[in-house]
Length: 163
Image (cartoon, rainbow, N blue to C red; front, side, top):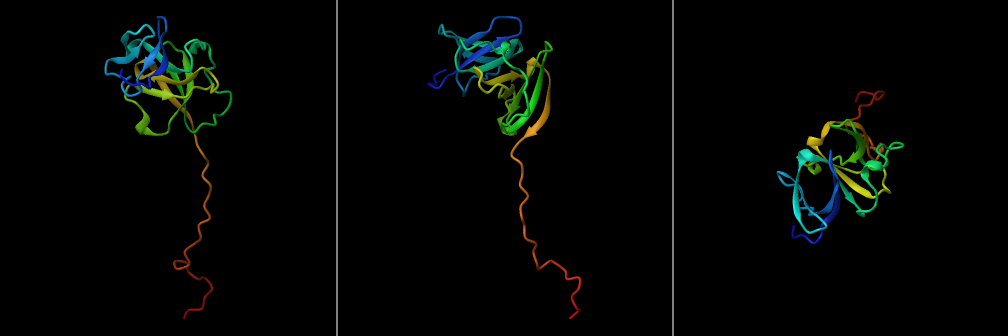
């Protein structure tokens, strides 16, 4: 973890306490789990099977993810896939997933949470923590119909005199 741009995270486990720490954006998703640097200075790898969610936070003391709003109050404005994830413990959360397959990680999904003003900026949901993931809608900019002019060379004349 030699990067100077480490991000603050709180790792929420299924049956244990949460783990605050820092992750390197380039190397945090290891093959065996999430690599985190704790505030005490120890590097730990938390196995994916133990993780419910990894929240990228503004502050460690900003409030727990479990107490925040989990559903969108209305149709989201942010562009992407509006998804609802169902966890193994029958808990659920909604979020916005980028509508770009190259941004989806093999280990899980990085979503934007419903409450944009909350302490959590992004939430990583490991595949092993989920029972199902459903797309509720596709949110994007509406396509404006273009005013394409017809090519007059391919138009036939209906009332023209044969020449």
